[in-house]
Amino acid sequence: MPLPKAELHLHIEGTLEPELAFRLAARNGVVLPYADTEALREAYLFKDLQSFLNLYYELMTVLRTEQDFEDLANAYLARAAAQGVRHAEIFFDPQAHIARGVPMRTIVEGLWRALGRSTENHGMSTRLIMCFLRDESADSALETLEAARPHLDRIIGVGLDSAEVGHPPAKFREVYEMAADLGLRRVAHAGEEGPPAYITEALDLLGVERVDHGLRCMEDPDLVARLVRERIPLTLCPLSNVRLRAVDVLAEHPLRAMLEAGLLCTVNSDDPAYFGGYVADNYHAVRDALGLTKEQMRELARNSFRASFLEDDEDLRSR
Ligand code: HPA
Ligand code: ZN
Image (cartoon, rainbow, N blue to C red; front, side, top):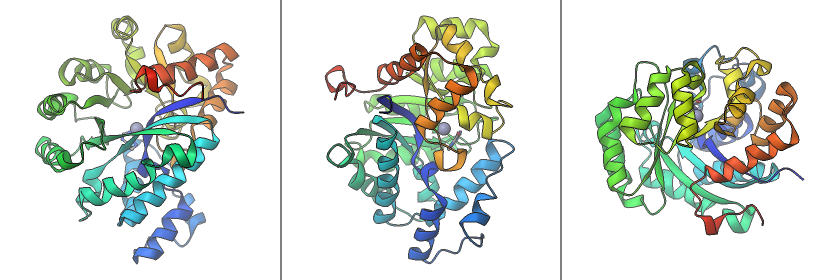
């Protein structure tokens, strides 16, 4: 039986498998510039974050209707449940859909048709986190938060993703303040491709409770000491780091050193349809490449629940 775990860093659009992308393209009359799923898979050779994002935004154009978002989420939930996921905090990128004319309501209600039934259908609890695209303007993020207001009963927090370098957290200070006033939880991608200073900014200026990736903290010992002291969780995504060339090979991934430094690390899949594995695949890959002990594997699973936004009485580990 797979280790029970929570998944805290997962972009729902990044779970769009080639087969579903072609099915939705046909259903919606969208023409994809690939002959078939095999030709599409050949495009999954990335040299950095941006080269991945180009394909990620291109493929998600097949998502148009509530039914599409529901089908996408149900496909993820089935795969995640089979990999031992008992709780998932799921990112979505509304700006990327709204810009194509898909209303916020269609996105949120479509996802909710699946997530609202995740306990009965898949034995999993779920939460939804709305991400702002950091390569869009701060005003666009504010408009997006405004558009989400009628749906805040479905959304527990905000995040920050897309192209990192040149788009420091400081740019989104105001929208994060508004999100906090609305009672939303706060996370942000930082230190994936961007410098350690972006992690510090995310903590100090955006008030994030958890850092997505945070990999590059290892370049700054004072920052590591702070993250350890303040028990700030990091949502690491090892297979993503290899595919996007943040690390050369998995054997050189700093996860083991990070655990040994006392950091509160979790392992997640990020965009599993693109990076070659869902969450248990990430656990197994780091175990094999880094020689993690059984106790370190259990620590990762334990950390995933500790770092989650579940309330204590909702903890699903023992179910
Ligand atoms: N990093 C930044 N933005 C993203 C990612 C990622 O790994 N996946 C989807 N959007
Ligand atoms: Zn991510």
